[in-house]
Length: 439
Ligand code: ASP
Image 1: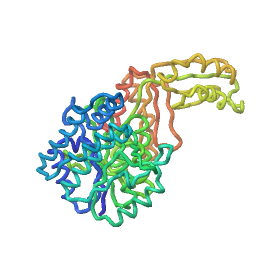
Image 2: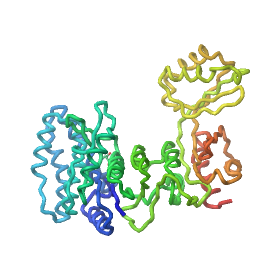
Image 3: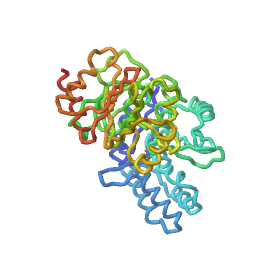
Image 4: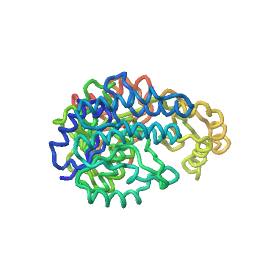
């Protein structure tokens, strides 16, 4: 089984972590393409190498001396190199980086050096070929990823390369300038390489044993999701659950390659499998719960709204005009409600309301602030009866007032609106009824 393995920053923060990674790779012949992140935090207050690089480059831009800062970064790598007893020196690489910083090669170039150098160390440690991502992953001039050129050139290279280390997070424009993905983008590189090499599995190694059913800051020791579909993941990620970069889904999904989220510190744990579809039903009716606070609902009423063609469009136009995107839009016969992010809306509130009046002539508009949205997601809900009923009885039991409910037609999720102050309580009671007591 051919695999791409991507390791996050905390998995590569020190020589000790590198050794764990080495053992994982050597334990499976199929782990042929390795994508490293830059060294991450070794302890809570530590600084990621990527952040150190951004800070160092900011000094270069201000024309200030950055020798000490660059040295601190070099020390991070030197400690790893000596901890692994490698015969490797990064002196020349750091000379080049210093020169390029003086020439203001760009903050993307600066940030990318974290992965680039870690790739060199990793390739030396494993005895794998080093492939510079700048030569094989490409971006369009507008900064978007160029899949056509990348797949062709990278595909050919990987075809003829048995084993390689390809640093995550960056690629280049046609003119050779380095460009990075957004933060956390090594996940995207892993996905691109997995698709180009047509591997059987993309293993994404991190410091947790997969996706959790709910946020551990709210639920003590929540259970892990064993398998989740891409669609379910999208719903949960959209509502704030993070483990994987959002854009990492697309390249592998196109090729039908599953992603396995694994824990470097507990490699024996199964982790979470992310798949296109599965006959494996999830252990519980729900797959996961996620949510966000800080919404405002704008409730608009007008008699005979249902028969007025274009009413919805006119209302939405008022939001569009002020550059506000809406999150949800449940509607009744003569009412429609728009959920927007409170911070985005607050400053423009009166202009938006005036525009709604002008464009759509509603009978009344009523605003409620400090709301939270919670998504209960699960492919199992379609077949299960009474899911909504169970959610409501759990919330009623916890004396939580439900402000809004919206079930998508895919029956993959139910969105619930509650007051911000009821957010944690609502998640606890939903988790409890579906996972703990399974009533
Ligand atoms: N090192 C980059 C970051 O900190 C990219 C990554 O780790 O995926 O965002």
